Amino acid sequence: MGGSFIPNLSATRGRNKNGDFFLKVGGNGSILQGVSFDAIDISYPTSTTEVFEYYQGGLGGTLNATVTITYATASKNDITSVVLT
Image 1: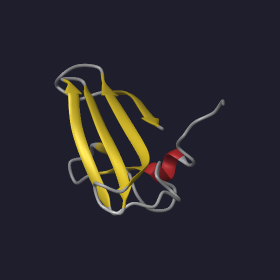
Image 2: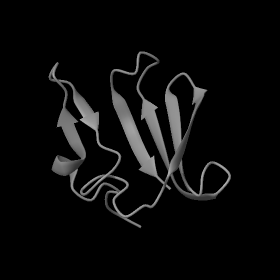
Image 3: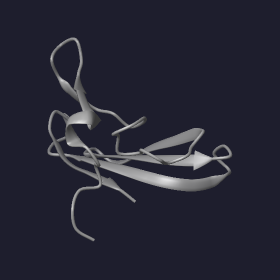
Image 4: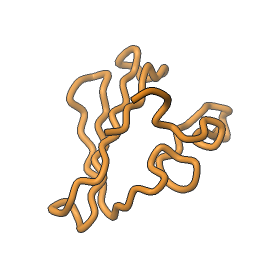
């Protein structure tokens, strides 16, 4: 499967009050557009990886999506990839 998992790049990121970019993870144009969830489980398997699991029916319910964010370094200043599975 080719292409980006992010449907509309300009709609999936914003800037905070400091001018830094952030990734939108819900709503129209986001990486999770169309994914139903009511609970999120977050884990940090390495110093440069964050894993967000999105469930419907609570944490014991159905896993509907996983977003893995990988950073260039442990300082987490630069994202190298965002993968939706």
